[in-house]
Image 1 (cartoon, helix red, strand yellow):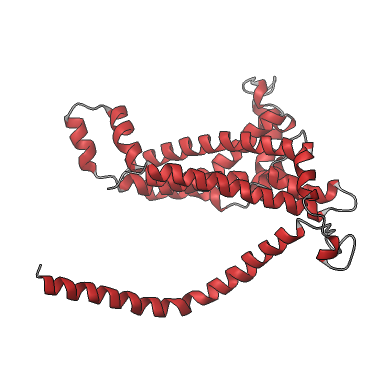
Image 2 (tube, one colour; image 1 turned 90 degrees about the vertical axis):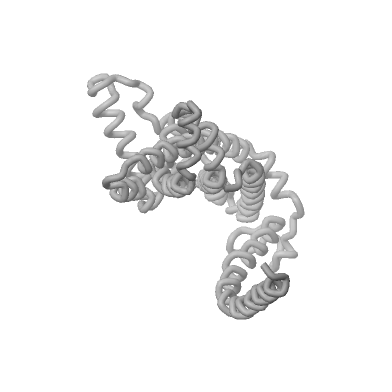
Length: 313
């Protein structure tokens, strides 16, 4: 291209960029104002209250938050709390199990959906439908399945097949974790499948065909072509599954309500005000701040690690 024309094109791109930026800011202002008012300001207030003796409707020690300032006492209480430590470990264990199960199941579903040519849209719709159900409703449905269908009709001694592991799953700490992972996988796998399906459709078929001509079998093509080319999808899916599993609340409430030592971190924060008398909202807020930092650290680390392994198309 002629240098003069190239210079003119670059100037036009710069001018158009400035043009759209000027007109984009007014469109973004309402969303930015809502984000600041609904997210940033309450978050900042919550951080301040985590250093105070806040009781929900009043401050212990005065009429203002600075009169009830307790420093790092709430955070010290959090790390000394056995309930918080137990729920933290339980959340980590559940997240590892659920994220692995979610990614395996959703990837298999995506491979099946992309291999089907007739009725592929119907399959994807059916797979996605559980994601539309609310967490509490879904939890009560699966509570009925685990307690009635599994324990009394199918897997008990007088049932179709005797498998003691699937009986009374919600009355044991680790069996309840598996039950919760089954619920989460059933609910979220369809949504993650759509992300994997998009990634699979963006992989050039020429690569797989060339590898097949060179003698690579199905597993070799999946390992050396499909997985590396799916890394952008892995980054998104791992981020979503990690964050959602860490923040899981409604199904935990519906399935076990924290009984049998099955509290996840979100429920531990929710129940802190009931475990303390008078209700210690400052302590609960300190747990919430630690919870936020934990999720941010884990998810950002995961994004950085998986981003480095992405293959440019």
